[in-house]
Image 1: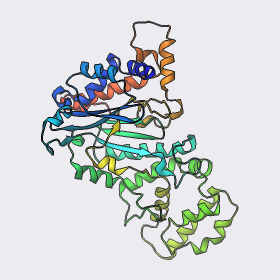
Image 2: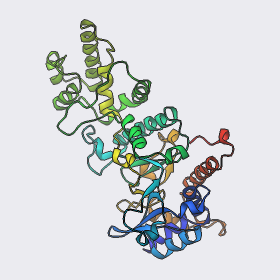
Image 3: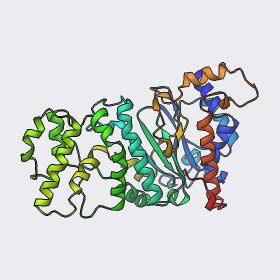
Image 4: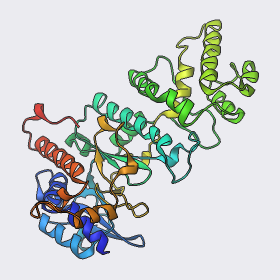
Length: 395
């Protein structure tokens, strides 16, 4: 508990906590008083229906309760802390950010280096692809600009879309966004999970272009998608059924490397498509590439207004790593294995030998993340104040 208190003191000093509260209030403290907070204690004890009228109350409660995680819920029609004072059914969700949760375990069917909760630099490339595809789609296809990407602290990433137009969406609007961004569809028993109808939408082509920057690295070095008969059969099953599968029996068992096999597969499909005079002949190859690499979204997190999600700068209870924000444009250089841990932050504060008057967070490796978050919070506040919209920072 003392360690947790130390990291919250470092992260949520006057500068950090004001930025967090500024983001969550959107320039309206009455508005914020109707947002639900959930504090998580050691042993997975959840303290629900917390709400605060001002930043001082929030800070005081943090010090008193000393939570391991802060979970954020929706804005409600009444103050969550007063919900028992109203009759059943009168406490309802009215607004929240559109959120996305991308977890590496959902890639287990296509990653071969790790499984379940484990990650490594090889499979982290899937997260890089996911961040770039989702970020581009949210900005270009939906016009959102206030996006906050946050490392989950262990094996995934979260995205908070804080634009006012996003926050006011009802469940059906959120569901439409989630469905638009969902391409890999089907259960464990379904081998082919991506089917493109007709001419691919520009967003599909954009996604394929993003994947292409990483595909050779994934195919050859990271995952070696075609280095065994089992893997080859899996990739063949992602093609339209009863097409070239029978013609590639020798290909499946050949000893060629994955790159050579992939080029052979593309040539075989091109020959088949020309022979059959297929329209959109590249669709089949696109489908394979997308099924192997396209983002896997937890759509239920996005569709609903009332799903708990960890606050930025929470501490993951398993790894001790801090859930730090990062810019999508910098995802290639973001390294989850060097993200500060709780222990490291405490040591940095304790070992500080510089100016003793600087805020605690400035004594730690969290400083760049806090500064980034402060800029994001200001961008959100500017939008809601309807000031200088044309000059808002592009996150």
